[in-house]
Image (cartoon, rainbow, N blue to C red; front, side, top):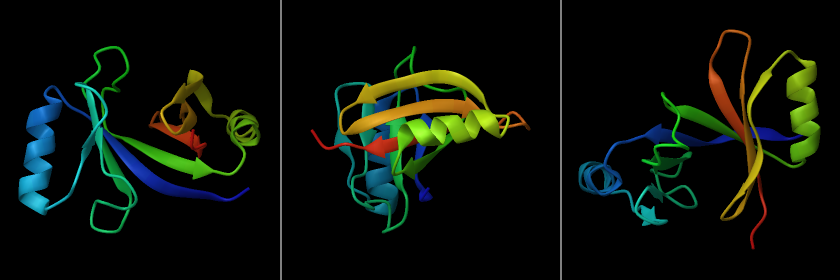
Length: 118
């Protein structure tokens, strides 16, 4: 299974303000996906992992979350659970793919996704 860290999602309280900050401070281009979410697309964060800004009160995590891209989401879920990961959010769809969240044994929450362009 190919897996690579491609995304970091930050919980924010003001998507527009944080979007403006990262664009001005670092020259990144973030796309707004509604009032509560914005993200760089295709390495927009300096050619490295993309960054997402999440202000959705129900969907945002308490701390930044690393997001790992895989080729087979169901196989990754099985591997995470077999290795001792604890599912914190079951598989759900989002614009561009599907993902799930889990905690690893030390308590860090991460997400795993598959890109499925619509």
